[in-house]
Length: 74
Image 1: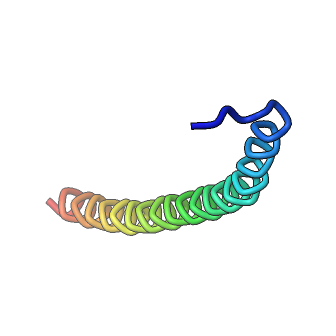
Image 2: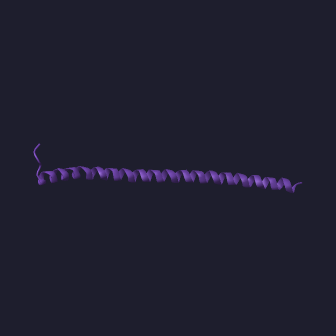
Image 3: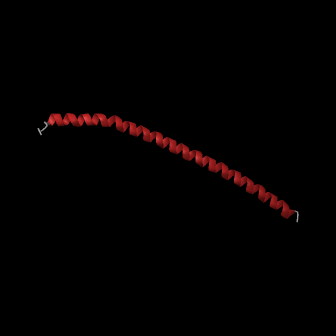
């Protein structure tokens, strides 16, 4: 096998970098999109849980008020 000259090896390395650069750019873009999606999903889930908690809290307040009325009528 013939030995490659330094310039030929450098050209191959440069060619590889030329291909790697756009691929890494696409990976970075996909990671940014995934991060946005995950953050949005977590925020939506937190909002849903907060709304559920507010609903439960409201129910507990109503139940406590009802018990107060019952105790007051005794």
